[in-house]
Amino acid sequence: MPLRLADATRNAKANAAVGLLNAGTGTTGGTIKIYTGAQPATPATAASGTLLATVLLPNPAFGTAASGVATMADPASVNAVATGTAGWARFADRDGNTVLDGDVTATGGGGVVTLSSTSLTSGAPVDIAGGTYTQPM
Image (cartoon, rainbow, N blue to C red; front, side, top):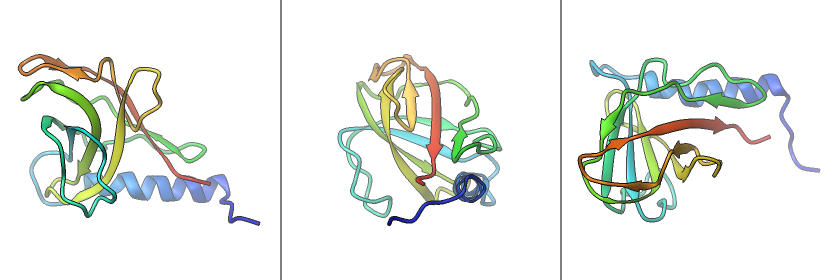
């Protein structure tokens, strides 16, 4: 039988993971870098694809988890720095250390980062509609 976590355990693990985004000595919050293409195999793998936007996260970056799900706080708006289709995102702490990678989808797609549209245009606003971190059971 597979391992299953109690909600309290899932919440603690989710809060610890997203809490790392608030770590570091930098003077700004953590970041989300949105890229084109496929997500790398692991967060330790070099970023691939074209960097479309860098979004500054508030501190805290996510709210407190419930049922193993932490919801991203509303970040400051930014404009895209390149044109392309968003495919994945890399989250880093205030010192630029990678914390996690996740998929990017359009609203309703259920990605870690949800955009109103995954088609980004250089100089145009990037509308982050939401985001969640889900700790597996």
